[in-house]
Amino acid sequence: MAMRGACRPGEIGTFVNEHSSQATATDAAPRQTVPLLDLKRQYATIRSEVREAIDRVCESQSLILGDEVAALEREISAFLGVTDTVACASGTDALWLAMAAAGVRPGDLVLTTPFTFFASASSIVRCGARPVFADIDPETFNLDSRSARLAIERLRPAAVKAIMPVHLFGECANMDVFEQVAQDYKLSIIEDAAQAFGASWRKRKAGAWGEAAAFSFYPTKNLNAFGDAGCVTTSDPELAGRVRRLRNHGSSRRYHHQEMGGNSRMDAIQGAVLRIKLRHLEDWNARRREIAARYDQLFSAAALAGAPGRPVRPQTVYPQAQHIYHQYVVRVPKRDELRAFLAVRGIASEIYYPLPLHLQEAFAYLGYAPGSMPEAERACREVLALPIFPELRSDEQRRVVDAIAEFFS
Image: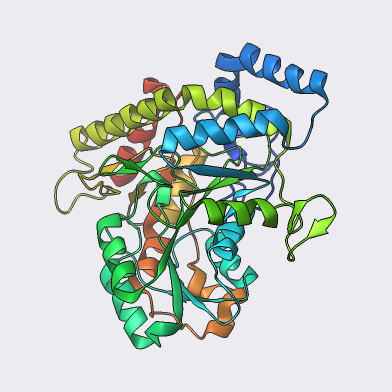
């Protein structure tokens, strides 16, 4: 949501993901022949549409919010099945706006996962609240409901204001159980759907479950802008109104400010580009699912996955979930050695995430010790993301799997 990085020309796979650790290549590394992501391939398929949309904005000279952003908000609401979408400047801002508008205040506790990007928890602190971590489900890597209940019970449950499930890598958290947790403890649900635009649980889209949800349109996301952008979704008109006010310096009428807010307005060019890409998103997400299925088949055929004792364990997908594969991640032994082996062969990969949030220096004041979240900590040692994007070719996938088979032979 807030990290920046640069790619050398032609090396889109080295692009720093907003939810990543750091760039994957150095000047001394071999040129990546199978990139983690290649945005140029996507652009080539929609170049004329995008240029026309950008030119429309340039001709209008309506550069911030305006008709393009308003139209995008309506189209996202229709796509997700919510009443209101509020576009903003980044996914990080979207998380803060969603929580602040939902009433998270200084002194409140907000429960979330330690196995996610930093912005999930830092946005809680930005509201003046305190993050509380619970461990993850080792199969899906999403927040575990039993750990969540235990964490709440260890605290003063009345002080816990909200729960923030993260739909990690494009698979929804188990929203059946989290709706029950929220009901039992009278909590608000704020979805971190930054990686999950188009994902669903029981055919209900991510972003349509909680009081509010936050999405990122960072350039590496499935629905991706030409820079930073995000949005908040909700079906609470009053909450939506407050988000609109907070994104504009706490003002709903020019030069009249009801509260302290921020400057988080979406640029019109981002709105125009996102409107074009939204039209293609279902096809792109379907293609990602096809690529993930092919990975599964190739790994099984190579006797690398699909049975106990085999070295490659892909993320488990619950039958209620429609995964959009923002990332295709596997759990493997000797993860760091495998990643280095792939890099030498020009195959990009990434570690999401090398250090869980509860052990980050910035959160040392919370008092968590190594071993307090064993599944999250184990995932940080074992999880590796492999190349996946809609334009990835089957021969490139074969190279990835063949290289992994060679490593484990």
